[in-house]
Image (cartoon, rainbow, N blue to C red; front, side):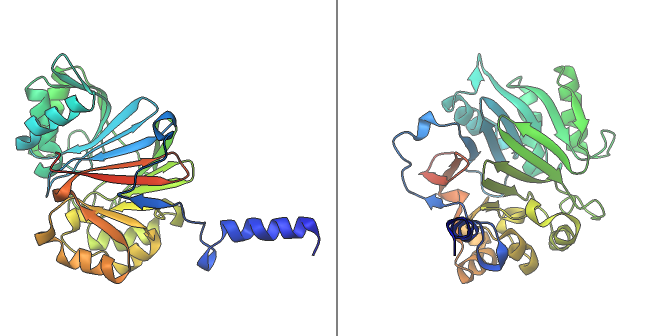
Length: 295
């Protein structure tokens, strides 16, 4: 075998794993990153300690996107957390993009509450629903956004958003008969790293998305458990994602089926009830840390 063939063979071994999958990005949970970590350009996801709610903040290259804001009673601890992280100026949280995956109380009320108390400013608000969709909390939130001069718009199916150097593809199961099933799914890529935010998608939506979207839109290093981990994932969906790590926006008592499934598959996981989760990547490796008792 000549030198060129040897090099190509080694390259293929690095790129291809079992079944031809791309080589995995290392994922470290509970380990300290290297000394120069903070000097690198990073994608960060903050998952706030609000079991049975979704409250997340993505940041990259100085840009930010909030993905859902939980129930209204989470407003005060959320403001304290955003202030601690440097997103609050003169009593207002400043976030570039507000995205609502679906307008159930545990995902949208926090937006309305922050706006009502004049504690939130943003460049735009995104939903996958028509702006005239008849839902109480969506309409209340849209009225507050209009009063504050924050434009709202409806996402296009398969729309690609950019957050600094990160690329975010938004898609959903359009034919789902209920809001959970129609939740916006976000596939986030940064360098070679990938993250899947699954909102509250149902089992039927999981099955449909496996057939509907390209395989590389699901394949991810890290995944949020669908619907707060209340039920296990559909097996085909979990096979498609192949996550190395799953975080669950709930507590232990409500996630037994989900955690049993992950344990059987030897997939590492944690619940947000144990403390705020911070996931960071430079595009080549993930470091995931959890801060006990922090919102």
